[in-house]
Image (cartoon, rainbow, N blue to C red; front, side, top):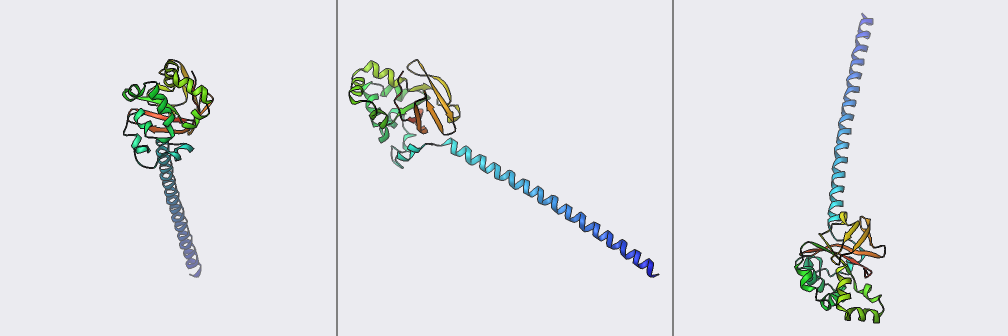
Length: 209
Protein backbone atom coordinates (compact mmCIF):
# COMPACT_ATOMS: atom_id res chain seq x y z
CA UNK A 1 0.00 0.00 0.00
CA UNK A 2 2.67 2.46 1.03
CA UNK A 3 4.71 1.59 -2.03
CA UNK A 4 1.78 2.34 -4.36
CA UNK A 5 1.16 5.70 -2.64
CA UNK A 6 4.80 6.69 -2.94
CA UNK A 7 4.89 5.75 -6.61
CA UNK A 8 1.73 7.71 -7.30
CA UNK A 9 3.03 10.74 -5.41
CA UNK A 10 6.27 10.63 -7.37
CA UNK A 11 4.37 10.55 -10.66
CA UNK A 12 2.28 13.54 -9.63
CA UNK A 13 5.37 15.47 -8.61
CA UNK A 14 7.05 14.73 -11.94
CA UNK A 15 3.97 15.83 -13.83
CA UNK A 16 3.81 19.06 -11.85
CA UNK A 17 7.48 19.72 -12.51
CA UNK A 18 6.98 19.18 -16.25
CA UNK A 19 4.05 21.59 -16.26
CA UNK A 20 6.09 24.26 -14.44
CA UNK A 21 8.99 23.80 -16.88
CA UNK A 22 6.68 24.17 -19.92
CA UNK A 23 5.11 27.28 -18.38
CA UNK A 24 8.54 28.83 -17.86
CA UNK A 25 9.53 28.10 -21.46
CA UNK A 26 6.29 29.64 -22.67
CA UNK A 27 6.87 32.80 -20.61
CA UNK A 28 10.40 33.04 -21.98
CA UNK A 29 9.06 32.92 -25.52
CA UNK A 30 6.68 35.77 -24.74
CA UNK A 31 9.53 37.81 -23.28
CA UNK A 32 11.64 37.19 -26.40
CA UNK A 33 8.79 38.30 -28.66
CA UNK A 34 8.27 41.42 -26.55
CA UNK A 35 11.98 42.23 -26.72
CA UNK A 36 11.95 41.84 -30.52
CA UNK A 37 8.90 44.14 -30.81
CA UNK A 38 10.53 46.78 -28.61
CA UNK A 39 13.77 46.59 -30.59
CA UNK A 40 11.90 46.99 -33.88
CA UNK A 41 10.01 50.01 -32.53
CA UNK A 42 13.23 51.63 -31.34
CA UNK A 43 14.82 51.07 -34.75
CA UNK A 44 11.86 52.71 -36.49
CA UNK A 45 12.10 55.75 -34.19
CA UNK A 46 15.84 56.05 -34.86
CA UNK A 47 15.28 55.83 -38.63
CA UNK A 48 12.54 58.45 -38.52
CA UNK A 49 14.74 60.76 -36.43
CA UNK A 50 17.62 60.34 -38.88
CA UNK A 51 15.32 61.09 -41.81
CA UNK A 52 14.03 64.22 -40.09
CA UNK A 53 17.59 65.42 -39.44
CA UNK A 54 18.58 64.75 -43.04
CA UNK A 55 15.57 66.75 -44.26
CA UNK A 56 16.71 69.92 -42.41
CA UNK A 57 19.59 72.36 -42.63
CA UNK A 58 23.03 71.17 -41.54
CA UNK A 59 26.51 72.58 -41.03
CA UNK A 60 28.48 74.62 -38.51
CA UNK A 61 27.74 77.96 -40.21
CA UNK A 62 23.99 77.44 -39.87
CA UNK A 63 24.28 78.83 -36.33
CA UNK A 64 25.11 82.26 -37.82
CA UNK A 65 21.75 82.43 -39.61
CA UNK A 66 19.20 84.57 -37.70
CA UNK A 67 16.77 82.60 -35.58
CA UNK A 68 13.77 84.60 -36.78
CA UNK A 69 12.75 87.27 -39.26
CA UNK A 70 13.12 87.37 -43.04
CA UNK A 71 16.75 86.25 -42.88
CA UNK A 72 15.95 83.12 -40.86
CA UNK A 73 15.51 79.71 -42.45
CA UNK A 74 11.73 80.04 -42.19
CA UNK A 75 11.83 83.54 -43.66
CA UNK A 76 14.09 82.53 -46.55
CA UNK A 77 11.74 79.69 -47.46
CA UNK A 78 9.04 82.24 -48.33
CA UNK A 79 11.10 84.25 -50.84
CA UNK A 80 12.78 83.49 -54.19
CA UNK A 81 16.50 82.86 -53.88
CA UNK A 82 18.02 86.27 -54.65
CA UNK A 83 15.56 88.03 -52.37
CA UNK A 84 16.08 85.41 -49.66
CA UNK A 85 19.86 85.82 -49.88
CA UNK A 86 19.45 89.57 -49.56
CA UNK A 87 17.83 89.03 -46.17
CA UNK A 88 20.66 86.83 -44.90
CA UNK A 89 23.60 88.81 -43.43
CA UNK A 90 26.03 85.97 -44.25
CA UNK A 91 25.40 86.49 -47.99
CA UNK A 92 25.54 90.28 -48.32
CA UNK A 93 28.66 90.31 -50.56
CA UNK A 94 27.14 87.68 -52.83
CA UNK A 95 24.00 89.78 -53.16
CA UNK A 96 26.12 92.81 -54.09
CA UNK A 97 27.79 90.73 -56.82
CA UNK A 98 24.46 89.36 -58.09
CA UNK A 99 23.10 92.90 -58.27
CA UNK A 100 26.18 94.16 -60.14
CA UNK A 101 25.77 91.31 -62.65
CA UNK A 102 22.07 92.14 -63.08
CA UNK A 103 21.09 88.57 -62.15
CA UNK A 104 18.52 89.26 -59.44
CA UNK A 105 15.49 88.80 -61.69
CA UNK A 106 17.10 85.84 -63.48
CA UNK A 107 17.63 83.94 -60.24
CA UNK A 108 14.31 84.94 -58.70
CA UNK A 109 12.36 83.80 -61.74
CA UNK A 110 14.23 80.51 -62.25
CA UNK A 111 12.41 77.32 -61.32
CA UNK A 112 13.87 74.51 -59.25
CA UNK A 113 17.56 75.36 -59.03
CA UNK A 114 20.39 74.65 -56.62
CA UNK A 115 22.69 77.52 -55.65
CA UNK A 116 26.14 77.14 -54.12
CA UNK A 117 26.32 80.45 -52.28
CA UNK A 118 29.72 81.76 -51.10
CA UNK A 119 29.51 83.39 -47.68
CA UNK A 120 31.07 86.79 -47.00
CA UNK A 121 34.36 85.31 -45.75
CA UNK A 122 34.76 83.52 -49.08
CA UNK A 123 34.77 86.84 -50.92
CA UNK A 124 36.97 88.40 -48.22
CA UNK A 125 39.66 85.81 -49.03
CA UNK A 126 39.99 87.28 -52.54
CA UNK A 127 42.52 90.16 -52.74
CA UNK A 128 40.60 93.43 -52.71
CA UNK A 129 42.00 94.65 -56.02
CA UNK A 130 41.07 91.38 -57.73
CA UNK A 131 37.56 91.41 -56.25
CA UNK A 132 36.93 94.98 -57.38
CA UNK A 133 38.19 94.13 -60.88
CA UNK A 134 35.76 91.22 -61.12
CA UNK A 135 32.86 93.31 -59.83
CA UNK A 136 33.63 95.90 -62.50
CA UNK A 137 33.64 93.32 -65.32
CA UNK A 138 30.01 92.29 -65.76
CA UNK A 139 30.72 89.54 -68.28
CA UNK A 140 33.34 87.88 -66.08
CA UNK A 141 31.20 88.36 -62.97
CA UNK A 142 28.17 86.82 -64.67
CA UNK A 143 30.22 83.79 -65.70
CA UNK A 144 31.52 83.27 -62.17
CA UNK A 145 28.12 83.66 -60.51
CA UNK A 146 26.21 81.44 -62.94
CA UNK A 147 28.87 78.78 -62.39
CA UNK A 148 27.47 78.51 -58.86
CA UNK A 149 23.98 77.54 -60.09
CA UNK A 150 22.79 74.14 -61.31
CA UNK A 151 19.41 72.91 -62.52
CA UNK A 152 17.15 71.00 -60.16
CA UNK A 153 16.73 71.29 -56.41
CA UNK A 154 19.32 68.83 -55.12
CA UNK A 155 18.63 67.17 -51.78
CA UNK A 156 21.70 66.13 -49.73
CA UNK A 157 21.38 62.51 -50.86
CA UNK A 158 21.54 63.66 -54.51
CA UNK A 159 24.31 66.21 -54.09
CA UNK A 160 27.41 64.12 -54.74
CA UNK A 161 28.34 63.84 -58.41
CA UNK A 162 28.96 65.97 -61.47
CA UNK A 163 26.49 68.75 -62.30
CA UNK A 164 26.18 71.08 -65.28
CA UNK A 165 26.03 74.71 -64.23
CA UNK A 166 23.99 77.58 -65.62
CA UNK A 167 27.31 78.94 -66.95
CA UNK A 168 27.68 75.79 -69.07
CA UNK A 169 30.63 74.04 -67.46
CA UNK A 170 30.41 71.33 -64.83
CA UNK A 171 31.26 71.24 -61.14
CA UNK A 172 31.82 68.17 -58.99
CA UNK A 173 30.56 67.55 -55.48
CA UNK A 174 32.09 64.87 -53.29
CA UNK A 175 31.06 63.63 -49.84
CA UNK A 176 27.97 62.32 -48.09
CA UNK A 177 25.78 62.83 -45.06
CA UNK A 178 26.61 66.34 -43.83
CA UNK A 179 30.15 66.56 -45.22
CA UNK A 180 30.44 67.85 -48.80
CA UNK A 181 33.13 69.56 -50.86
CA UNK A 182 32.70 71.27 -54.23
CA UNK A 183 35.51 70.96 -56.79
CA UNK A 184 37.82 69.69 -54.02
CA UNK A 185 38.15 73.21 -52.65
CA UNK A 186 34.91 74.67 -51.31
CA UNK A 187 33.35 73.10 -48.21
CA UNK A 188 29.60 73.23 -47.63
CA UNK A 189 29.30 75.08 -44.33
CA UNK A 190 25.51 75.24 -44.14
CA UNK A 191 23.48 73.02 -46.42
CA UNK A 192 19.96 72.22 -47.55
CA UNK A 193 18.62 75.74 -47.02
CA UNK A 194 15.24 76.14 -48.69
CA UNK A 195 13.93 79.17 -50.59
CA UNK A 196 10.77 79.51 -52.64
CA UNK A 197 12.47 78.37 -55.84
CA UNK A 198 15.86 76.94 -54.85
CA UNK A 199 17.87 74.78 -52.50
CA UNK A 200 20.94 76.62 -51.25
CA UNK A 201 24.28 75.29 -50.00
CA UNK A 202 26.45 77.92 -48.37
CA UNK A 203 30.15 77.39 -49.21
CA UNK A 204 33.39 78.83 -47.85
CA UNK A 205 35.17 79.50 -51.17
CA UNK A 206 34.24 81.32 -54.37
CA UNK A 207 34.26 78.82 -57.27
CA UNK A 208 36.05 79.73 -60.49
CA UNK A 209 35.04 78.22 -63.88
